[in-house]
Image 1 (cartoon, rainbow, N blue to C red):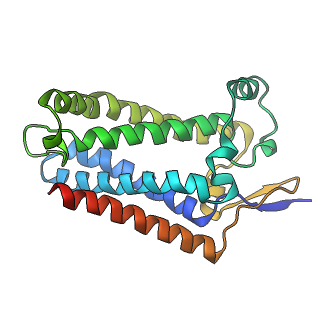
Image 2: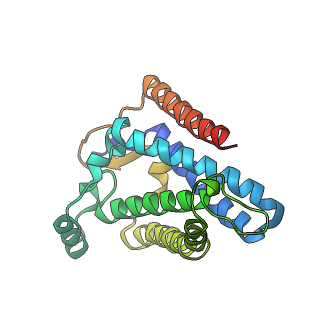
Image 3: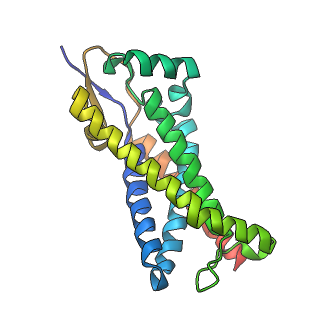
Length: 221
């Protein structure tokens, strides 16, 4: 018997694909430069909003979207890597998937933060550069353009490769649940709440995040 379990609620799925589009567009606009940098900054602000939303949603969102439900100890990660447990045992993010999520969120946060303090000395200047020393701006710019960008490319590439490997080697489709929200399991499990009330809560949370970022940008103008 197959059980259909709602794993990813609609707000989590929308966040995932919105973030994916923004990150790709950020990399493209950074390479183009020039007038495209105006969109680069807009996309950066959008990613900041999304990251703020995901942090909050990681506390109040659907069951499998909450951080506490995919926090694994080093021993659990090692055991998973050694034994490759049955995929059905990990309903949400498995241990390596969880590490990937936290790594991407952390490096994206650092990339956005350094972008706010960066200055390419041509036409693109972060909105917070005037609040820090020139040395800070230089270091932030170097990290943002050289280290952070490369780290994100590596992480995103590894993430996509992992999805492909899981599909080809273990026949586990990780993309479909992030589109439909559901997984088909051999045993029953907890469903993430994905009601209209949850989506309204997510919309209110997103609105607050947008208001905070907008307020900060208006304040530094």
